Length: 219
Image (cartoon, rainbow, N blue to C red; front, side, top):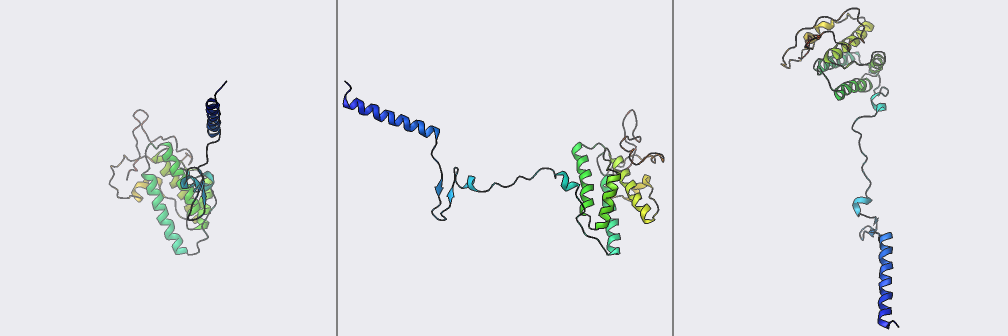
């Protein structure tokens, strides 16, 4: 016969075992009520109950870069002309200081810049024209030379529409000298007249053996 004490011990042990199993399967909730606000917080306290901040993508999505024009029409002709001169100065100087051997990230950054400019340019009708040019002549970013000559070609397309004379793309560095004091790069030979604007990725201005650049554009 099992003594009364032994029976009680077995019953208590069994109850404790069942409670342990139940606690393991269904852990107790850590929820509690804030005595000041009456708000109930879940497991982990306030931190886990607060809304999570939305993560910002490291690169803008395609629809942001390649969207439609944002700015309205600019009616002031004087402001439009001044804005155009300043913007061409900025973009030509940018391409003339672009790396000779850009990384994929650097090429993507420059391409995105041109497309975002075509959306945010303060002159809406000018931005729309620039977007059409980007569709017809996508940015060339394989090198400093290809980027600068591509932009010069696009600039001359605008000059042609406005009835202005074409700019000599062989003298870009002289016209858009930023005075940055960089070591000059040897002067380039003018691009072939029978080469199309999209023939810039293959750079004939570099020595075939040494790969040394022959275009001046580091200033």
